[in-house]
Length: 234
Image 1 (cartoon, rainbow, N blue to C red):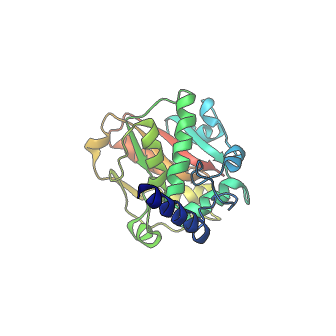
Image 2 (image 1 turned 90 degrees about the vertical axis):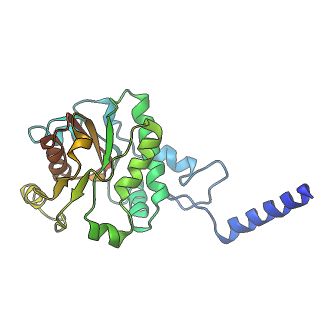
Image 3 (image 1 turned 135 degrees about the horizontal axis):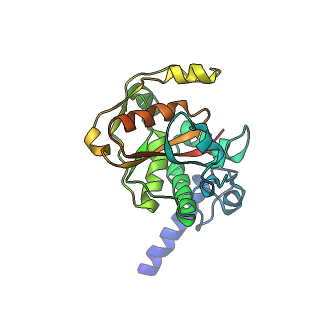
């Protein structure tokens, strides 16, 4: 009987793969049983920056003279049409939260291999409640979940609130971007960050103005130190 049940289970599993194929988020080819959200070929093609191996990397330098960060890094290079853009588009607009966690986990493994100084807390950059409701989730929280699993550092998702639904940053100058986000965050639980090294997580960094605003609020609320990590750097 057990052999017969196993036969039917395997048969149904194969039928399910045909009717509902589990494809790679990068190239859309079917995944094999050992692959998870991204095929081996696409994993090998991920445009890693390896910025975490260098203290003064391009992401770290974005905050020089603006925000005293301990570390700042991005996992992938983001360019129009490249694999990082394809994956981030799937994450944000196809609601592939599992992909965010998978990429966050891959990012964490790279950080662990190269001696990234572990923080006390991981803080996913919050969305305004209206935007999060419209999207259905916060992509930064998905990425933070993957980092939490491998770094074994807790995620503090409710510590900072986004109080202003600021207009889009697209096509704004660097100064206008900074003014656009100057006072959009509030630390709702100062005791949770007091004396802590906080790692702020976001999906993509451009000028860093939004992350700067959040980091400044954390330091003003008693955080001992702030680091920045994003999935991609534009």
